[in-house]
Length: 413
Image (cartoon, rainbow, N blue to C red; front, side, top):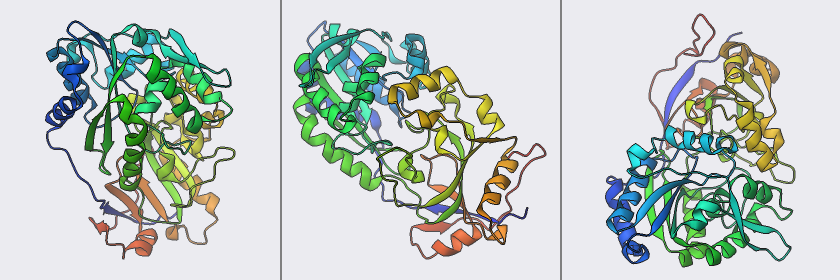
């Protein structure tokens, strides 16, 4: 099969970057009154999640140091629902993958899947919180605020979601994802109860720019969560990276994983949700998606693999089905763990996908190739797709067109 040549292009997005992350975190914590919040000797749970957030190690260590300076006794608490295979060892392993360890943080990392009920919603749904969080003298939540990949609401991915579903551990996350009203309604309802019943001190909201760098850091007090986080969510939606081309025949995603997105690849980028009752995004318009591999940091969790049409044998053989199934049974979106068609090599995957398009000339295929759905500053476009978008002032051609090449084993170079 003859393939179109590919053009490496730069996608330009408006972006502010924080140069000194620790200094920005310290300034925000001081402004939010961390010294007054943390009593001398208080045992403080610093919550860390399962996402691959820019500079998360620096941010978390700076929060730990600020608690120590205020006289508190911090410990790191995984707040990631059922991730890490819904086990304490698995969740510690996820954090270790981001270099969040006792050695790097200067404090213990403690984990438990035990939860306690702190209240109920009007319909009787129990509100659950991790036991270690409740037994602490204070909770500091750290998370990235961004559009979610499975629902739309005033609160999506962010502080409120981590406080409710993340600290709900496996049991709480399972209840939340299966609730009849959906996460958009449940998160603020649960959050209201938790903020009344649990010792939440502060939240550190992180916004990444389109280049996977921290662009904003804000420390919020609990009374600010309800009104400020939705504003930050809208800012994140406006500034997030995306594909600046439309009507793509084939999207090649080199790697997917939980460190990239909760669904392995960001549905807001690929334009594919595949959820009953949830409308499909209008942009960018992709006919076929192939995924070539998993990231190392996803530890075999292939949630979101079902969003692809074709995967490779190497991706399939790296799947940890226990971790993947624990994730999708919690979310209830089982189709996102469905195994697509498996092809033996990258080359066979590309050729099979193009064959499905029934193009008169495969060299005219509109192909986009990306490393993952986070790193979109530099991407590759086939010549026909680039020609259709060349007038976009935010696209810059970086290299002359080159052939799609594969090594002797059929791996895309």
